[in-house]
Length: 427
Ligand SMILES: Cc1ncc(COP(=O)(O)O)c(C=O)c1O
Image (cartoon, rainbow, N blue to C red):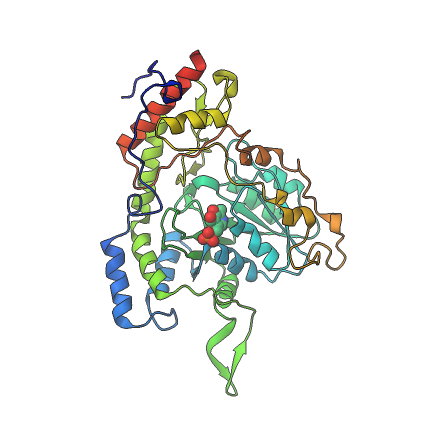
C-alpha cells in the first residue's frame, strides 16, 4: 500500500499529494441523496399533504426509526436542537434544575437547557475519546441535578456503562445526544436506545440527512407521550372536550414536515450502508498510518463501534516537534484541508461568563434559592475541553470520512499524513 516516503512536503516546496478537492458533505459530491429521496418526495408533492398531521411519511419515519433502534417510540422534530428541546420538555424539569453536559458540543445541546429555564453544568471530557468523562460528570452532581446529556462526539459512543450506573445511582435522566453518532454501538446496542431518551440531528453534515431535521427515541411510554406532545403544540389531537381543544402540556410546534420526512425515510433505509462506508474508510486510514511516527488514530473503546462522523487523529508533539496547528497546515498544503481542534468550550462564551441569557436578567442562574455563583463557568474549569477547542493548542484534527470519500481519497490522506509526519520527525 502506501509506503513511508522522505519526499519533500508541500510546505517545504514539494509537490502536494493532491490538488483535486475532496468531496464535500455540503453538496451532492459527498452526499448520497438522489432517486430514492426523489421518489419519496414526489409522492408527498403529488399527495398535496405537506404537514405531518395530514400525511404519512413522518409517521412512517417514526415507526421505522423506532424499529431500527429497538425502542417503542420515536418522534420527529425540525432539527437536532429541537430534538434536544423536545427531550428536555418531556422531563417536567423545574426552573433552576441543573443538567450536566460537555462543553465540547454544538450549541444545540445546550441552548435547549436554557430554553427550558434550566442551568447547564459543564464537566470535562475524556482526553482519549473527547466524550463527556463520567468521573467528571459525577463530580459535578449537586442536589439540583436532574439530567445528564451524554454527547457521543465524532461518532464515538460515551462510556455508557458508567453513565447508566451514574444516572441510576443518582436518579437522573440520561439523555444521549447522538447527533454525530447515528448507528454507533456500545456493547452491540445502538446509541439512542441505551439511555432514557436518544436525540438525533438530520442536519446537512450528519451521517444521514434531510437538510435540517431531528429525531428523539425512547422506550418509556410516559416519556414517549411527552415527546409527542412537545414536538406538537401540547394538545391531544382528536380529544376535544365540550367543543374545546385540551392543551395538556407545553409544546412549541417542532413538527417535521412531510417533505423532510420523505427524504429522511429514504436516508434511513441507507443509514447502515452509509455508516459501514464510514467505518471502512476509517479502518483504511487507521491501517495506513499504523507505523507512522507521532500520529495516533482516534481511540475507540473496546465496547464501542464508532460511526466516524469525522476521523480525528491526534499527533504527538514530543515525537514530531510541532503542534496540531502546524501539522494541520502542512496537511492542508498537501491538499487534505483540515485544521487543529474542534468546537468551542461553551462556558467561555460571553453569555455564560456574564450569566445573562434573557434580557438583562440573570435568570435562571439566580432563580429561587439559587445564587449566581452556584454554577462555575470560570476559564480553566475543563482544561481538556479548553485545549481541544483551542486551534493553537489542540493536537487533534478532523478529516472527512463520509460517503463521498473513496478508498483512493483515504490513500491520499495516509500518504499526506505519512509524508508530513516523517518530515517533521526527521528534520
Ligand atoms: C452533538 C450535537 N448536538 C446537537 C446538534 C444540533 O443539531 P442541529 O444542527 O440539527 O440543530 C448538533 C449539530 O451540529 C451536534 O453536533
